[in-house]
Length: 93
Image (tube, rainbow, N blue to C red; front, side):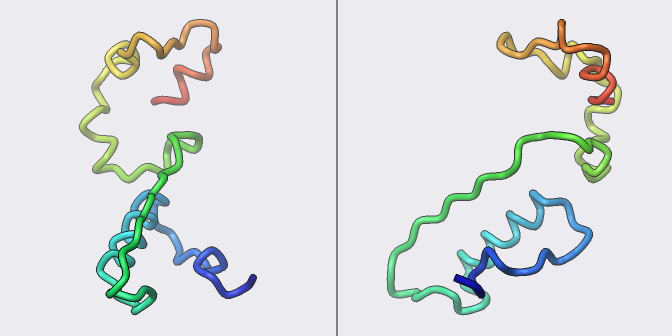
């Protein structure tokens, strides 16, 4: 089926999680009249997991963590960087 929300053209140079959040908020507020406000609805928003390129993250999200060490950033017991090669540590920076 063509013409549904999944076929819309991406609006341009905006970080994907911001675009996805704004789209969800627009739907909740029914800004485009896309849903029947008299009917209940469920909305699930699933943001992409962090992945390369890390340099596309807006600076205001990066700056609070810039001085943190790899060990401080990867402090969960189920997250290991040993054995993943040098690239895994360098990609975070």
